[in-house]
Length: 187
Image (cartoon, rainbow, N blue to C red):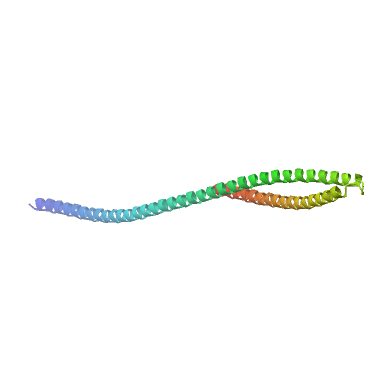
């Protein structure tokens, strides 16, 4: 009986030892579970935070893309406007050149007529045809006045043409600058 009692006591001690060991393992397991739960909570918070950042960055990207597209459209409209202005100035220049050529032709005709009138006047006898001579003098004077008017008109046309060329050069310079700015913005 004593032996049996000793065996039972040893058995009880073994069971108590196993129970203590199991209790310690259970506590360790619970501590691990709590640590893992805390880690999962932190990960969930981090995931939510990163998701929010991602959405914010996507919205910022969309806004920047829309701004860029709008700026590009504005620059395109300016470019078209400048091209139309250049075309208009080119047409104006051609018109002024045509007008200048016409004025020069008229000036040459008037110069020929004046020269012819002077030659005619020098050949006419002073005693003969005084009435015709006065009429020719009047005609010569009228031609000289017209010649002076044409010379003034030619000078004005030349000035207008120089201004048009200057405006065209300014527009061309602006267009080049705009093209360079546009290429830099693309890069």
